[in-house]
Image (cartoon, rainbow, N blue to C red; front, side, top):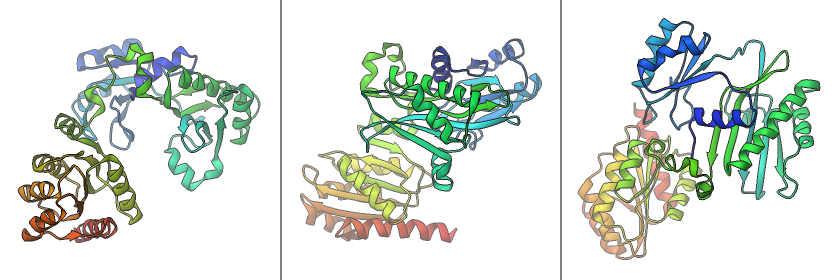
Length: 381
């Protein structure tokens, strides 16, 4: 479960992590409280459960009340990456000119079967980007669960990213407090990006992320009303859930449909192997029929950026002829690449070939064709 930024900051503050003074509003009239509660300039942040809000126009700044009055209805009326903006976090703008921007985070490291702490001297940008371009700016530490994360661990990491003296101690203390949040709330991810370190040694969490393991929500009844709220899902994800389909939106341009979560994951992997970018994860499930397949295609086709579709079917209790009928009934208007084998395989292939569709014998060739079709479309623009 992902928490909105304002909820994460409330928790961070309870654990002694400094955050900007702020208010949360959900209508234009409440914005009139800004000049009473805060000092300008202020940052106005759309509260949606997606990353990259700033690049998408979901974070704005106001130097005056008049400017804030103009921006508030624009943000509350926008849709950000498929999510309607219903709340704004308005907070006093941090002075970034006279400060360093750091990154502090904790995550679950499945490879090492432990939690991992990550510190970086380059905050304010995606940590993945830093890892690619300047890996030396990152310090990381796998945590022994029997020992936990101690002050001396945090100080060592702070020194590794070039901090010293009181600044090193301040950042180390905040890092330990973030670990306390991470453990107390059964976190999958907790991060501050950026953590501002001013010239005089003060620190402040300008952004806050806290994702909680859904399997641990029974230990956190305070979130029972937030759980898996509809705000976590895009409109297409909601539609798929209502239809009984497992669907996750992704940022690429190649739609993926398969039967069985493992096969769909393998489809994503092989698509990436050929430099393709998946637009979604969609599992029609075992025993899918023509109606399920038609619905799955209709959902994928609603994404305007989808340029081709990769359909990967291994028929067990799912019958290939039913899948084929769903494809033919929908008649996608963009290229599709189908790999199909298993129950009623020959019948399914015949239905498709009789209707002008080519069926590949293996998923490598089918995935490669899907990537080529999407590339040809992009180059033809």
